Image (cartoon, rainbow, N blue to C red; front, side):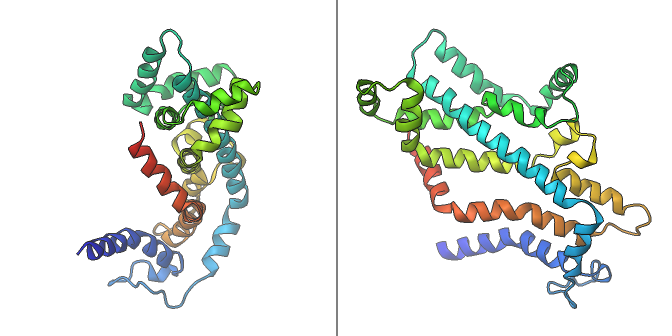
Amino acid sequence: MTYFVLAFGGAFVLVPLLWMISTSLKGRDQLYVYPPQWIPSPVRWENYVEVWTTLPFARFFLNSLFITILATVAEVASVAVVAYGFARFNFRGRHFLFMLMLSTMMLPSVIGMIPTFLIWRELGRLDTFTPLTAPAWFAWGPASVFMLRQFLLSVPRDFEDAAVLDGAGPLQMLRHVVLPMVRPALLVIALLAFQGNWTNFMAPLLYLNTPDKFPVTLGLKFLETSLGPGSEAPMWNLMMVVSLLVALPILVLYALAQRAFIEGIRLGGTKG
């Protein structure tokens, strides 16, 4: 019974992905056929070429890759430093600051949009990648800080005491002793940060104006509006091509790191 429920749930989750693949290979005359056809006939591979030449999607993907890698590296590094500070150092106001940081998770993200937009405008950084990457250097993921802190609390201090006797400083202990021991947690944080930055739509929409700087999420919306004039209906086949290409890196990363990702989630639920 358990396997039947799992198989049914897995098949149910896969339906949207299979429908996206099927639609991406259809011609325009097959989009609204009833009953729907799961297997396109004929298969139209030209959709992948057409969408690549309609708009500069190579540029959009490069922009997304640059933003995502920079923001992910910054977020992992800053979260590690902040979580290590909360886990290992006793200072006045530590618990208050930690609770204050966690309380920010209760605030809707839209509350900070206007103030942060005004700040970046005053700094003259609108229509640049700075608003999309710089905040990651300040541990903008309180949930990630909380999870990593719980991991760090479970690491025995004996290893750090031994490192102190060898003359290691706090950053050296963090880099060479502590972080290798919480690698599953770091991988989970990195994957979640990659997914969040790669699929981010609202922040680029708010800060970017020049099409050459658009990430692929904005390019997808740009594709919809570009095909709109003169079109009788949305070109769902081309939209599904781009959607599939956007989802592909996340699926590949998860497949490659699946075991470590699940291990990190499991340990995160038992430690603390």
